[in-house]
Amino acid sequence: MMSTYQNLTLAEWLAIGQQSGAIQDIRTIALAVSISEFEAMAWIADLVMGRASEREAIAFMRRALENSQQPL
Image (cartoon, rainbow, N blue to C red; front, side, top):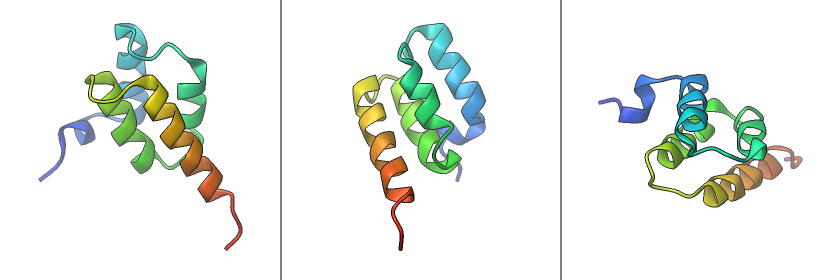
């Protein structure tokens, strides 16, 4: 079963977030497109639906980006 957020693309969620005012910080968009779409989409959807703050989403995506850049 697909989650609700999977019915839209990341770009669509970002557009909805900007139009609704849920996304106001440009860092949110920059980070979302810098990490895997799978990781970003859940946080952006939660942000747009009011289940997470933009601050929480930025913090998570920043950690995800830092972790993806660490050597194995």
